[in-house]
Length: 256
Ligand code: F6P
Image (cartoon, rainbow, N blue to C red; front, side, top):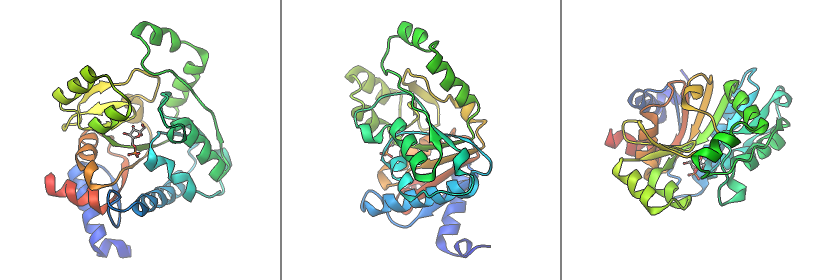
């Protein structure tokens, strides 16, 4: 056993793995809500896990958000990195350009020497427009890549906070609340049992495709995200590796 297994973190990690029914949990010290530097620890840990575990995988889909955006700062070039191709896990366009999945995919590629492709897809299209756009060759190319994705690196957010950040219309926000939405990832909103209660209309990796992805790294910390993380993990694929901090981990254990 590693030193970590003998220390408190090893024990808490195993406890959380059992509670969340996932195969791997990594916990960094501190609480990212209280201390910004902890976000960097999360990012560093995620970068290490990715480098160690990617093996001969090639297609890596990443999401937006501050947690994933910090990871490329800790990535370095490694032997197989030239074979890696980074893509956005979904095509939505957010408000903060620096935190968009497309931009983050490019920073991963720059950091480790891989390649990337960008994919822009308008959000909040009508159902009819979405059906038409989805048939565009650029969208089809992404849908094909999602079928072949080897690794997904994603953030998890609090459902209400994400709805606010996305300027979701008030009826929709109320609906989310009524439906008990707690966590959000990939544009899907989950209730406390992991049931999808809402999804943003866009082209992106589907939950069915996610199940087949061999390496899934979720990066989310901070006590305030405890419910969101637990909600998402209630139906997450069991091969998921959660990189979190003590703040979130202890709060999840206290509540579950
Ligand atoms: O908007 C992209 C996204 O990955 C969401 O799916 C997720 O809820 C959020 O960002 C996490 O953001 P942060 O890491 O900044 O809390």
